[in-house]
Amino acid sequence: MSKLLELPVSLSVAGSTVVACILVLRLISPDVFPAKWRYAIGKMAIGFYLLPIALVIQWLLPLFIPKQTVTGPMPGLPLSVQQTQSDLTTRAMPELNLSADAALVFLSIWGAGALVFAIWQVYCYRKFIKKLQQTRSPVPEKSEAAQQLTLMKVVLGMQSNVQLAYSSAIRGPVLVGLWKPTIYLPMENIANVDMNMVIHHELIHLKRKDLWVKAITLAASALHWFNPFVHILRKDIHTWSELSCDEEVVKEMSYVERKRYGETILNVMAGSKGVPIRFCASLSGDGKQLKRRLTIMLNVKKLKKHTMIMTAAAVITVGAIGTSTAAWAAKNTPEVSTDTNQTIEGAGNSILYKDVGDSIPINGVQYLKYSALTPDEQKFIIEEGLGAPVYALEGYEHPVFVDELTPEEQAQVTIEEGYYSPDSIARLKESSEKFPRGTSVTITHEEDPSIPPGTSMTIRSLTPEESAIFKKRQEEAKSGGSRSLTPEEIAELKALFLGSGNTQK
Image (cartoon, rainbow, N blue to C red; front, side):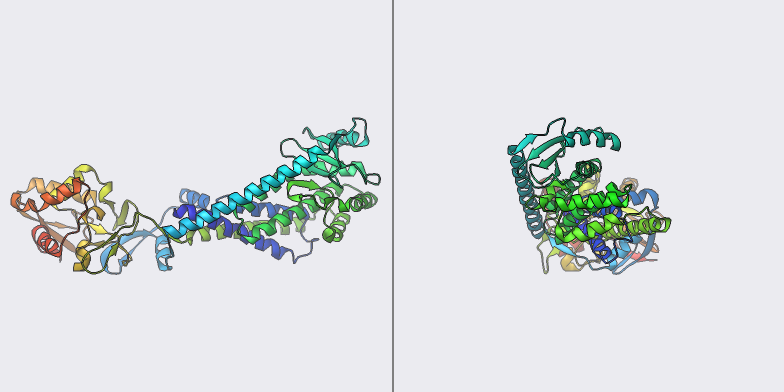
């Protein structure tokens, strides 16, 4: 569930960071950065809202950067634990935790909101399309609009099958349809409209797949419905989609032609009122943006080298900021305490086992959880009582050996929740077979790397009589039971198996 929570959080934070950069860029004059590049940054923000950039980075980094390790002493544990540098940095920061119930509530609300938003948008889109189809009438093949469509498709090198139609439901030309694009023309107010420029504008939208960009933006809005930045982005995408389209249309025009194009925009200015612009591309636009739109359109120039360098640097910088933020958000998403963490009641306080997976690296030796061991290794631990278990417990920064726990904690831990070294089990098994039962054997770090350097461990195999203590424990393990050892059993086991225990050389 942690990964499921990490995904929407990292996506939302990363996308919002890019939108924040877009808001900052609003303070810069439109003459500095071309409209198409600002539109490109908006599309980049959509990508950060939808693509798990952080997860891709986490997957790719190990392929190119070797994993470096640092060995250092553990507080409260006389072992050197091999860890990556990133792990050490993470432990230095406060750990944020979220209960599984709280995470489930958050994910449920998030999912329900996304579903409601998506259903509403689909309903509005179908309603809009139905209205257009009900008022649709064909455009004659010999009309000026049909002839300009054929000519402009050749000029732009387009093979797309685009339809033309009239509709009384609109007051300005619009492009609608992802799979079956149609340019709808109004039944009225087209006498003073330059049809060549209208068709050119709408075909540029189609060629750049701006309708798909708007559809994907709606998907991001549904996924992050709770985030106000994504709704700001949706409006920004529409604005720069139109401005960059104008820029593309007029880049080869003379000043006189640009003025005529501006007059065409003015003639259809009221056409977008009541039209859901999130579903279509329209030549007309908001009157509030009209002055800026005409100014940009009249002053479009070929990009100079220094402008291209500045623009590329800005886009790369925004992308780097978004990527870094995505990685940071993924790393700092609160961890979810799952049901695999078990609270065990015993004498004194309760113990909460950490869910650290099926393995723990300690001093270069891999310790496996009891459930991850082979049946033969589990049987050896149960019958012989050997294996030097390590436990990952809440309240301890690092894994600890059983003999370093307090008597109350020792009374609560179980064999099944311990971690064991398969290599150590193999060596102990070999020693138990080589030496008669009841014989004491001293093992050093050189013989078993899981033993801390400079210490030794004295053990001895159980005699048949001593093995009787574990028969009941073995039956409980087979039946799925999990009973805590009593302090008396712990003390007796230490005396039987460890002899003098860990003794400093």
